[in-house]
Amino acid sequence: MTLFEQKVYSAVRKIPRGKITTYSEVARIIGNSFAYRAVGNALNKNYFRGVPCHRVVMANGRVGGYNKGVKRKINLLKKECIIIRNGMIDLEKYGWDFSNTPRTILNLSRIRRNYSGSI
Image (cartoon, rainbow, N blue to C red; front, side, top):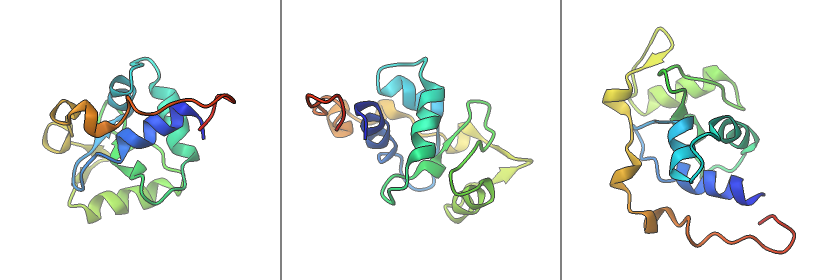
C-alpha cells in the first residue's frame, strides 16, 4: 500500500455512518486538492472492510463508481438512510465536513514513508 493510499483510507475511515463526502474533499484533506481522480483510483483498489469507500461520491452529488458495483454502493448508502433521487445525493443534507475533525484524529501527520516508498 502506498503512502497516498494510506492517507486516503485514513481520511475515509473518519466519515461517520449516514454521511458522505466527495473525492475532491478527501483529496483536499490529505493535502492535494487536485488529486481527486487519484483518490478515486485508490478507493477502487481498496478491499479492506474498515474503509467505507461507498461514502465517497462525486462533487456534483452523483453516486460515482464502486469496486463492488454501483448497485451495491447505492444499497449500502440506502442502508445508512441516505436518500438517492435520480442517482443524486443531497450534499447539503448528508455531506460530512472534515473541518469538524481535528487533524490529530485523522492521523495524517503520523503516517511515514519507509525506505522503499510504500507502507
